[in-house]
Image (cartoon, rainbow, N blue to C red):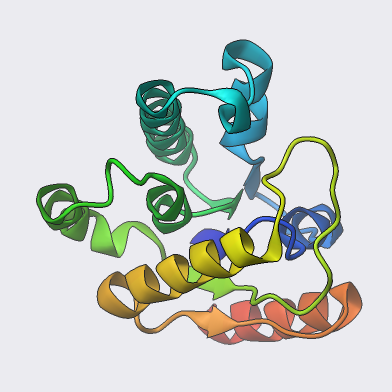
Length: 168
C-alpha cells in the first residue's frame, strides 16, 4: 500500500510516523527538512527561490514514492502543493489530477494543538491555518476519501492501524 500522512506544519505527522511500525513499508521522511540542509530555509528566501525550493521538494517526493512498493510518507504531494504558492495554479493542478490514484490511503491530521517553534518550520497560527485550509481544499478536490486522525499520538496511532487493517 501507498500511504501518506497529510496536514499543515506542526500538527504531529512526524510524531505519528515515528510511532508506526509496519513490516515491508518504507518510511519516507519529510523531504523539505532534508532539502533545507542543502538549499537553506525557505522562510529566508526570495519568492523565486521559494518556488524553486518547493518545486524540488515536489520532484523529490515523487522520486521517493516511485522507489518504494509500499510506503508511509510524512506528507503528500497535496501538502507540498499547499505550500507552493507559485505552483498553486490551474494548469499545474490539472496535471496533478493525473496523480490522483498515487495513494491507497491519505490520513489527514487537523490542527489541534498549539504550534511549537522548532526553528525550522514556519511560524504563526494564521499561516498554519491558511496551509491547513489549502490542504483540505486540495484533498477535497483530488482525494475526497481521505481519513481524518484526531486525538493524542496514541489515539491517532490506534485509529491508523484500525483503518489500515480494514483496507488490507
